[in-house]
Image 1 (spheres, rainbow, N blue to C red):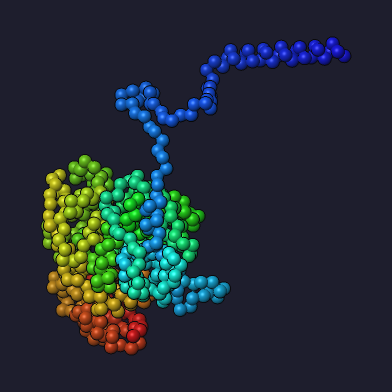
Image 2: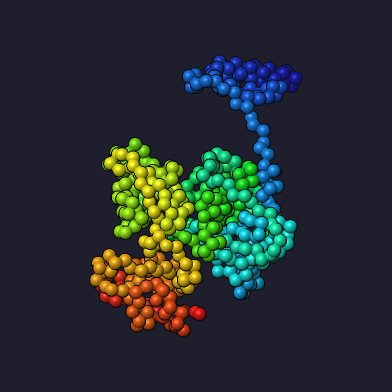
Length: 478
């Protein structure tokens, strides 16, 4: 028994030794992993042959960036907004309004937020950083950029944020997203600028402007309308949206640039509506085919597919197939960037356009017009009823009247979604000739008829490219 045991042990030892010997003989090229706990790496020298022609550099691990000063400056100016309707609670006892964040932008209590936060609300309650609750009113909204301006109804001085220059932002730059969701006090997240001039097709307005700043700073529901700031604590964007499949943050958040927001805010404060200037073109992104046919060296710029008659672009001499590459010295690479730059100006303002025609770079001065192809500003009082009903109107030009062979009529420029006018199935391009069987030739005449009507209004008119007359009826609430 003893001999048998010794024999088994001897055979096992010899077998193990031979196995290791054979493995090492046939596996000389196997990968080796060496761990040296006594000397942690502080930096790395690139000496690989791939980089032999490149100056060798040492890459030292950077220390954590300190955001505390910016966060301390910003958080007192970011508020929570509770927007409630008349039927504040639903059938299950839950809150039927909406909540979001806002940014105080002046010491007298003006607050900027997203339009979708306060849309259709009857009452607004602002919760300040110190948890005090105050009422606010809507000064004006702009669905085309998803911005709204509010005013806190109080005489005290408020902490506020200074506007920064969103044009100066660089991809890779650190930013902070600050919100005040669900009355949890301010929440601060950090990230970098991932891209600029992003269009994600979330705004439903016919004249929407999407030229978002994309970041990877975490933005969750309730942070809409909050602040995007640089490391100096300057407001460089209004957080608006995320792209997600789960309903939660997944790494993509988008903010309205501060330079665009400033113009919208000024208009809402001064006029109650946005004074939007238009070039009067149909812009398109440049394709590879366009680049080849037009002799372009890159796909950067905006192709003019069509120029509207009597528009600002036509007056300035712009033509179809011109490629816009700059506005006021700012380089234009895409349609969203062009829309953002032009949207910063009012009708009557003159801007400088750099464009390429027949391979040659040129420049022209363009005086922007409104939707009615005039340089006059929109009166907030006259348009209030029309916007409430859900459409925008303009007078017909003499050229259009001659072409259509009519002496009067008013053109429907746009129709707002979910409005009383949209429910009639009317389309933009409808030409109103009569209101309640009375012939009309100006927007003022239509507004007067609406104000003098109690109950149902009947519109009569036609479409240029469709035969016959069309009738639409809707109710006017005084």
